[in-house]
Length: 111
Image (tube, rainbow, N blue to C red; front, side):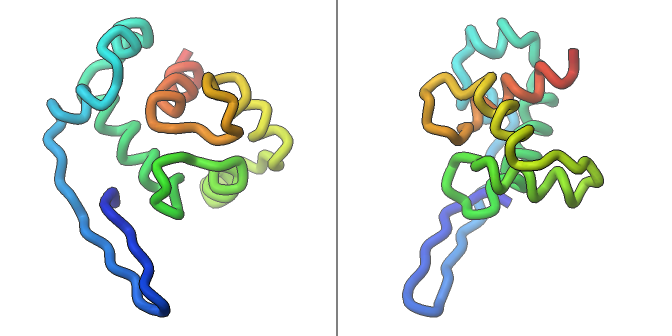
């Protein structure tokens, strides 16, 4: 799920937001979409996957989050291996990947 996540003491408020596929494509730079050769359906699938990886709803995926989900899916990569994968697409050097960087990573995995 995507949405706004806020914590107040021991309470958590979460608002789910449905976003049309056509709008999802606008979340990425059109030149990046073209460069990666993605279609709207792939962008939607990548967004669904990104939301699963983004366990803290921060808008980025950390090494720990990516490693955790990969282990859940039966891919036993340690955090060092995942850090290398992230560093290959982490254009802003934050150590985490945002949605556009995630799309770049997924497109590389498809090659």
